[in-house]
Length: 128
Image (cartoon, rainbow, N blue to C red; front, side, top):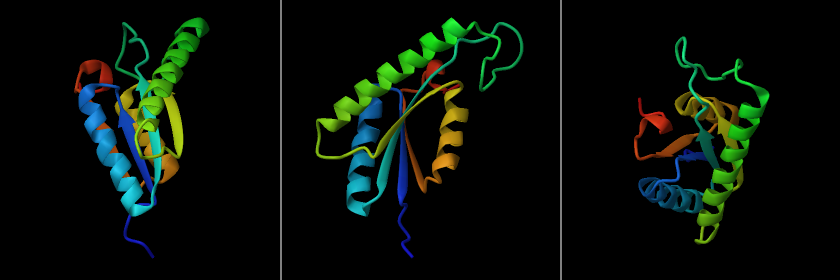
């Protein structure tokens, strides 16, 4: 039984600081022969009433679709930038919602042994 994580989840917000975390995650995945999963979470527009929610079910479907498309676009950009180096991303996951909740939920789904988070720490990236 290996003591090293078989799956690493890299969560990024696309900032320059996050690129440093991506480099570390790529190197770790390569050295440990682990799967590397990449995620980008696009924050859902905030509702004006009530606490933050993981899903904003009261938003019009066209707003939700637009936010989901934005998440896919930003994720593709990040995966493309990472693909220019020596490392390899096993799978990319676009998510929409509260970044911290979405990252934890995805890590649990994947049964990730390690989560690497790269963020500039702005409120939009979940650093509330």
